[in-house]
Length: 380
Image 1 (cartoon, rainbow, N blue to C red):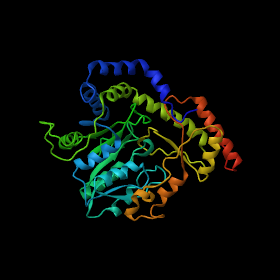
Image 2: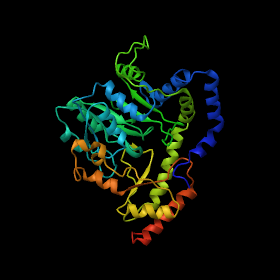
Image 3: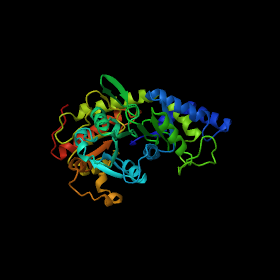
Image 4: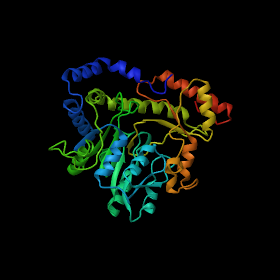
């Protein structure tokens, strides 16, 4: 059993992907060009946004969005204390100060009720992270941002296709804030065969600024006239062509993930020390990860390993306790929910091609663990 099986997905789409790659090879345009432009339009249409700008990673999407919004030295950016390091890293790389807020214990996302207390006169933006495939509570976050004149950059690296009902309307992740930031890392719900990313926006000026910064800050009129210090952050045409094949199946794959999550959830219902993922009302959770929590996490990890069941810990360290961010001055106890999550979370295998038999094998091993460790047995 694999934690994720990229080979199976490729075999299912082999003829389409091979043909798309061959088209790029025969066309001879490997950076930019028709394949990249086509994919950008497909994502913009899928998300309902005006602009979708391809980049070489989700990290660059965050960094260049901050840059495009004029956020840098002396500024503060509020984000969650429980996320992948790239979220805080991009803020620091832009020259700003990451300011952390604790999480909601059920969703693992930033606790919107705690954001306002973290705002200072230096605060310029909020980066909510839609963790594990479920959107943060965006309605109150948007109200707070409007009240304090703050920008919103959505970290959608794990949430392409996730939706939320806001004011009676279903909105997709990446179409609420000033910018949305996506990753196409191979294991994402929409994954390339290498690194890749994207920034989305409905603002013409922001889109133009990101496009300028991604090619060394060069002028659209003359690529050798550099207007700012930028970066080299381009998605190559082969990756764009592959992603164009895959995006047609994204909604179907997300539905398949949800079905697997439901099978897990039915099995874990009533287990005393196993907390299944919580899907908030009016949210479409796309289950980039199926993340349970248990106080006996480390024992369960070893038990699964002994049974040759793969599992992963996302993430073992909250942001405020990362050594690289020690200069911020946070300490143990500052964000107790994030710290507790880091000690308890465990992600089980989930991907569209994951079979019912494999799912049942995982459930059986967890059931044996629960019984052997005197945790309430399954209600089945």
